[in-house]
Image (cartoon, rainbow, N blue to C red; front, side, top):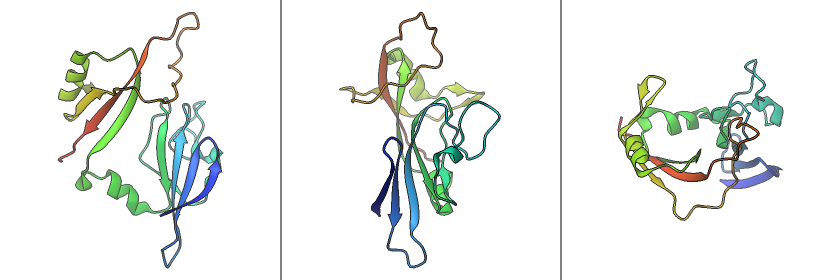
Length: 165
């Protein structure tokens, strides 16, 4: 793959595969901001859909991020990539960085490593650790903190999942 055009100085790179005989495949690396849905249609909320960002026709998100989070969201016109990256039969290791309010304690990281209940389902075991030294990244806006409260300390930690399903 080669880098194509810079689409938006704040949000996306467009990658194209110029080696295809049929058409160049498109892969877009999009920094999804807070308050944006990982879908092209609205859901009735105040969150913005992807349709507002002027992506090329026939590209779709590979995976999703919650509207109240921000980060890398890949979009492509190659439907097979979604399956290769996300379907459990193509299990592969993944690493996520999470920026959270309050610095996680060693005990909370150990609990996360064993699996935690989220919406009634237990997550798979993983490895979790604080990133040291802390990388230089932008700070996210906490979800509607009271205006009178000082923001709590922030820290980054990594979650490494090894899927064996």
